[in-house]
Length: 198
Image (cartoon, rainbow, N blue to C red; front, side, top):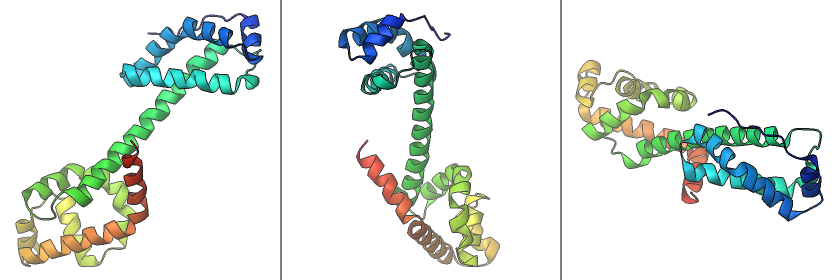
């Protein structure tokens, strides 16, 4: 579906700028269906698409004095919908990534096959997020953590490779995760706050 940008009567725009609510309602009825359809191209979520369009009209009304009568209002609205949808997707992607990080740090057990499997699944995404914190880990902690995360080795395989006990591997992994939690505490607190208000 292509953007539908029909011309809008300049008198209608002028009335909206002067605070004529009925003119805004007329504009809303005229463009709302197409704007929602356009938003769904990006979100594939009818409810969220409608909310974004509704919020856009609310913002338009609040900032009606800023409307540029020389600019195509229809084009402006479609462009705004696109930008709001893209911003929404970016925020959702970040939340999903942070949620995965939270599950890894706080939900999954440090030892056992469940942790190893989840660890391997998150290896790629965690690479960027943990890079700085990883640099600050003690050498042995970092080496064991990387063998598990980057090479996908099980604890028993790491123990054999490094000629240490499985218990030592588990202890060092626990220390690594504890240090990562500590270094990322402010970031994690923010994610928890956002998740609480979702």
